[in-house]
Amino acid sequence: MVLTGATSGIGLALARRLSDVDVLVLQGPDADPPSAVNALPGARYLSADFRELGEVERLASRILDLGPPDVLINNAAIPGPGRFARTTDGVEVTFQVNYLAGALLTDLLLAAMPDGARIVNTASATHYSAVLDLDDLDFERQPYSAVAAYSRSKLAIVTASRSLAARIPQTVVSVHPGVISTGLLHAMFGSGGDSVEHGAANLEAAMSADVPSGTYLDESSPAAPNPIADDPGFQERLHSLTSRLVGRPLR
Ligand SMILES: NC(=O)c1ccc[n+]([C@@H]2O[C@H](COP(=O)([O-])OP(=O)(O)OC[C@H]3O[C@@H](n4cnc5c(N)ncnc54)[C@H](OP(=O)(O)O)[C@@H]3O)[C@@H](O)[C@H]2O)c1
Image 1: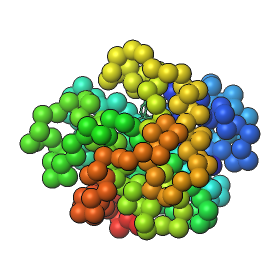
Image 2: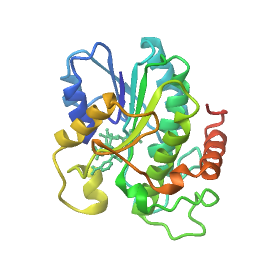
Image 3: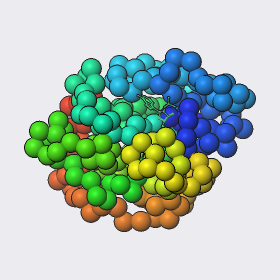
Image 4: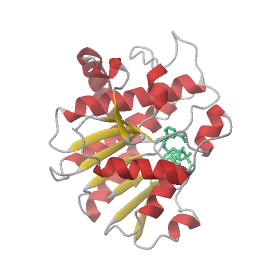
């Protein structure tokens, strides 16, 4: 089982719940794991900063050295930064860390994952209000804001999860974990939120929810996503753009 973004917030709470899993691979951006991750028995920590797609490729190959995962939880994310910023790969940073890195990691692992495997993509209810102009990833035609950058990365996740479901034998779901009290929430939306255990329970439920592949879960209930996520033309354009940005034809 592989869980990204396991070093704080909802991911760390989920890692604690999963610590009896046979092989649990946890990812965070820093070279050394925080002591809370070190304290988890049996967990293996691998670092990768998703601001570099090369690090995602190295992460995938180290994961595959440990054996093909039966569950992949793409959970790592950042709040939109206060100002527009690009990665060294030339992509708006929120789009890359939150969406592109997970899409690349998934593709690099998929061929080795058994048909019964599951991919859980942590999305967000903010995707409902997102505007994702695929011709304007650099915010040249629309005003930049932290929430706009964040919410469009989550719309990309929901859309790609819906379209990937039709192309692979494995099951893929996306899930809004709830409004959860973490640094990410507070950076964009102020204080408040449910406990990280609540969000982790929703992600854990998504790992085994008896739902069709492609389902979007609002906490633990299947829900209709933003309708644009089901637009075949939009799905195809996002798929092509994603393949171009990661430099390989994605499944
Ligand atoms: N909190 C909410 O209300 C809420 C609502 C909807 C969706 N979500 C989603 O839930 C997931 C978990 O978020 P959270 O609220 O638990 O936030 P969080 O506590 O900030 O956790 C985010 C995780 O991503 C990691 N990360 C940050 N930058 C990274 C990078 N450059 N490369 C690789 N990993 C990186 C963080 O590492 P560090 O520990 O080093 O920062 C951390 O492990 C995210 O996908 C978020 O969008 C959260």
